[in-house]
Image 1 (tube, rainbow, N blue to C red):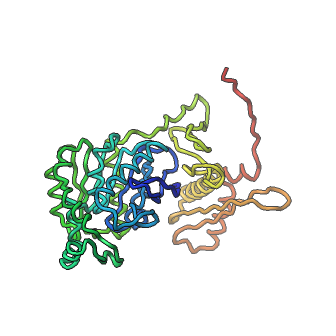
Image 2: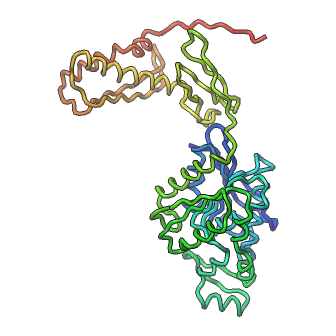
Image 3: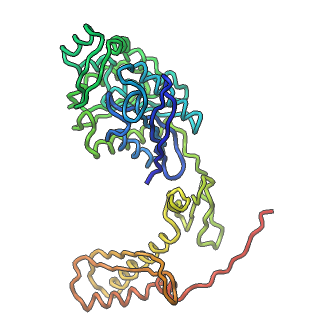
Length: 401
């Protein structure tokens, strides 16, 4: 799992804003900000799933509750689109001061409009991605009935129902959204722009994506979210959106700060060298294959790859499966798919303290005599024999002076 941390920072109006920082296991390719939809929170499904999915591609993502929403302080009635944009800029300041400035902004619905508006004020931003975003902030007015709008204008404020919850909306909110047209902003924006939109979105119509795309200058891209709903409520849709954003943004995000794997010397079987990213995160190289090895977070690792005993268990499973397939090929026996499952545990008993519990399964095999023979052959696999027989390890220290 990715590393997830609760954090707070000061918003544009001085209130404390609640946030969650999602970090990948291993090197951070780039830092990103995610802006949630109107009247939602940082924990809405789309925000959670997309942020966490982006971590699998090496992006660290900060998502937060705008002032007056979710777990953040402040009164929602006193906020507006301009204050949301200001909160985004403060979130970028927080990342810049504590980690690194965001180079990627991602926004959903009105959050998409907000990241477009905020981008020119965050110098380090290289890429902006929107999901079902309106072409101007005034589109939010469609959430209110004519009676709501009339009451707000007449009385200065009114209680309106949004997504099943009641909010107080003041006239200053309506006045503010009238002033935010995004055509000019995207036309002058220096960052690359990806507009992702569902053609069947009934909340924010596809014509909004057309308007933004036509107004924007290159580099600009469009991604159809196919049959997704406005809130991207299906996990398959959020995964698709996140994977597409990651692939697109890789052209603009800096490369991961991970050096090349070490090189084997002649005659060596394997080499393991720390990557320098902290914990136990290390390169492992054997033959032509290079991969990351690590330890779980609970013992101080980054969980960026398999742990040593996990690899030892996998080696036993691999050797068993391959030995059985070699035996079947040699004897001309037709066997279905072979599966070996291994569970490693520590036991308190006389003798060896490590137990490798091995379970073998062959697809479609019902012949009990052949099953017993395969168990006999499995016990002859080289890794099994090495583990039971034990091995001698000779160590020496090489001075780097």
